[in-house]
Image (tube, rainbow, N blue to C red; front, side):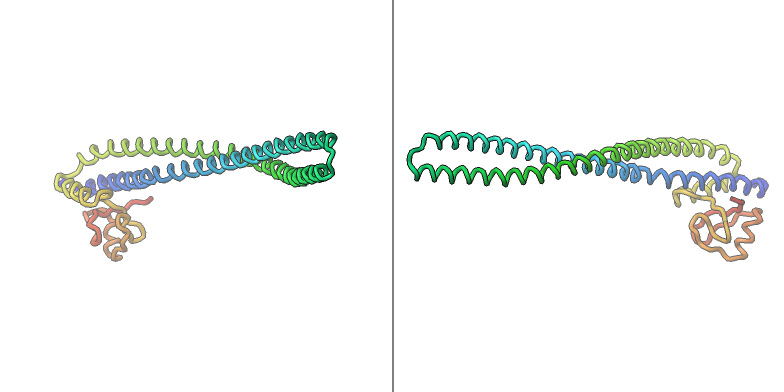
Length: 238
């Protein structure tokens, strides 16, 4: 077997690569969820703004309908008043006056409703315009956030590729038996085969080591495995 201190030096390098790969992969795994959250937020504000605009359009449509009905009422009253000039019988005259009064009452109610609706439209226009400016800013912010997430995802993939590219060179320096142990652990555990020890804690499984074991690991002069997860333990300052 090669010099054990050299083996541990290589294993420390492998521990740093494994730790960095684990961090990158963990962050990369959250990327779809983060992007989905941004897309949902963007979709929600777009939906809310669309609903505001549709509500305003509906109110304006209702206003136009009222205006048309008021125009119809006005024409109807004119028509009735012209008819009054030709009526000879009191009963018919009285009946037509009642018709006119009914239409005028209806007109008053519609005019009052129109005035209230116009106030509501003014308020809704103000809210929609204010929200539109806010939505525009929020839309741009969210689009930038999504682009930043895309950039970060690309950077993580590039970093993972770079780290994976560094591994063969270090692995080639390991004694065949040590490499076999490393490969078995990596295949079994899936992420980190060599773990750093910080404050007597295995950074692979985060179990606390016996003080004596932690002290021996700090010497970096022999291969020691974590009793909890089986990872090879090393020590380096982070």
